[in-house]
Image 1 (cartoon, rainbow, N blue to C red):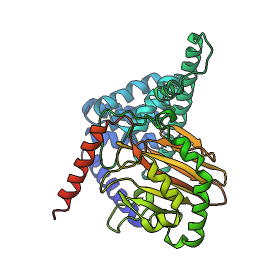
Image 2 (cartoon, one colour):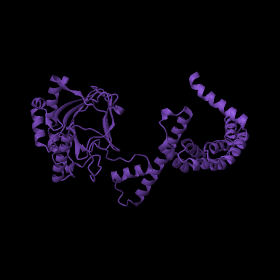
Image 3 (cartoon, rainbow, N blue to C red):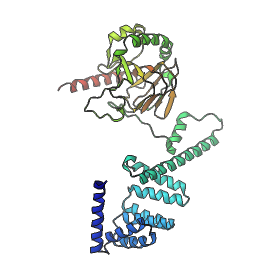
Length: 407
């Protein structure tokens, strides 16, 4: 504690020396005025702060504390004018934005407050870096902004209902657009880790009609599950952690799952190479995969895995490598209480139903049950990529591997 207090004590000593040497210096007046405001003498402090501001209009903290004094004196109009002077000097003054929002709230202008709070939240430091009082003010701002966003979204839905003569349900993407516009949900975009192909649509879950083979896959669910049971019973030791980052790599959101059996996988295909020993254990599954239009890219795809997620485990938000291919999920073991989110849409798996999604849009998964959840995952080409584009992409990515192998 003593070590942390030392710099503050030194600063106080320097301010005291300045005040003694030049009591009318603007910064000396500011130090005296700030101290008085903090000690509860808002009127006396305000007089000193206004004198300081008259002598130095370049220091945003002076009108910031003047605004605080005005607030303590219950003069919200003057407080708003002072805080605007502070923001004119320093537009990204986080505490001044929080203060302006609070002033608007005191004036009964909750909508104006929310719009200011929105700017404050955008530039806020991480909460753990804020002292308790500022952290509480930030959480208050977030709550006020959430209330405003919810109210805006409901207002917009009511307006849409008024022009919806057919009274049909609103299109889901229009509903999502309302939530994004209102600030209830974030805008979701493609963010591939490796390769971005422009002008491909950012669709979280793709329409089934684009993949006529899904029915064939779903019909084989029980067959695949039976072979999975054999593999898990006889070769569970061959399942390995899906996340295996090297020691020098940043772990980020993968702290819990890095080199952990909580999320384990067994590959049937890996980066375009067929895992013959595993496929031999699952001959019917392997034959089915051979009949499906997997995304064949030498050195990259397909990748096919049995993916096992332990009870009470969450896969954190992340994105995949490239939007030229999509991922298919087929549930095989569902203990219940298992969810999956892509972008702003969250679904629960159902046995016998597969889906295809764009994994370059942020996604995450939860197994909140008491048992292991297991699914089959494999990649297919994005249907909006032409055959000639697939050929070009495959050749280009192979060339990239060859170039990087040159050292």
